[in-house]
Length: 383
Image (cartoon, rainbow, N blue to C red; front, side, top):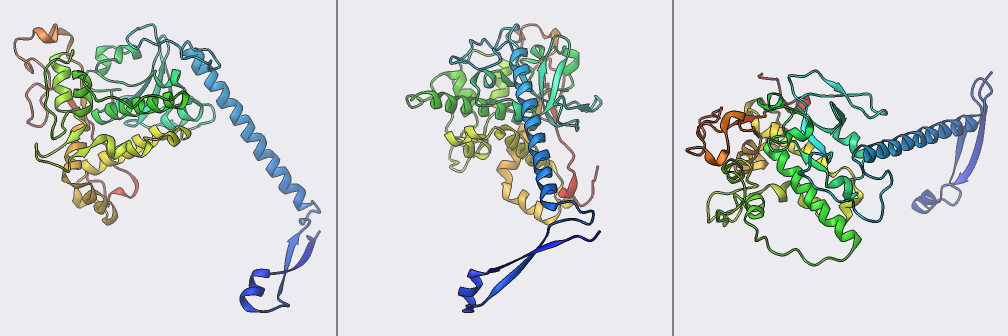
């Protein structure tokens, strides 16, 4: 059977005005049936109905995933009018971790039922610990159903580091080589993203006073280390090891000295564009931040001779100060060995630690997380 068509003649008003032709018209020919006698309009409507049905089914799956997540965290399935009390140091409180999938383990499937992709090794992922295992997601898949503007969920998100890996039900042997732990940049970005978003969530509930200047020594150390005018004052209640990391590897600023007025800032580079109330409407800001950070890590650690022209231009735009900072923050600080005793009781700081990094401070336990690039980033892979 041959398809049938309908014709519609109408005046093209725009062309009539443009060309001054009062009689200009066009004929539109549309199929009404296909070669088998079926109505084309009905077929199109059926496709639309199937698409809507699939979208509704996926939305229900995501709502169910969110309910299961809240139940797993010990939260009410539906958020209430008040925030649930939270004590982050309590081992009884379950957390959500951003971690890096270890290269020493096989690839795992994302646990979101609508995703059928594996989580690549050496990439960021989300882990929700259970009693003897963990539920794993791509970062972008997790935020399809987890509301990052939900304060109860937001305050439970942490980067997996040397200081909290046991909350993930990992043993020292699991992380002593840097497996699972995020790099320094990932650690700072997750922390800064979280505190910044918490601020805007609170403001969305009520009017708050302007944030006062930072006066706490530890907060100063976390937020301002590396800044050209920052002067470190002892008094932060942390071990010497954490103090050393915060002053060196984990400092969020990079400058060329006290006179530098063009210092590089981790926060302004990756977070300032999301520092507004409108960003609460975007549930995937952390995904975008970490994707850009991973790309910049590859750029900073790549050999320039192997880069194609447009990528080389991007690396040149980064500048030596940013490249230096990104390389520094690409390191993964490791936990102290268990036989170190109490850190503050060691006879000399930085002695007795297991690893030396690239001729740097002797004994500093770090692993550099340099990732291979893929796709059009390189002309050929020198590795």
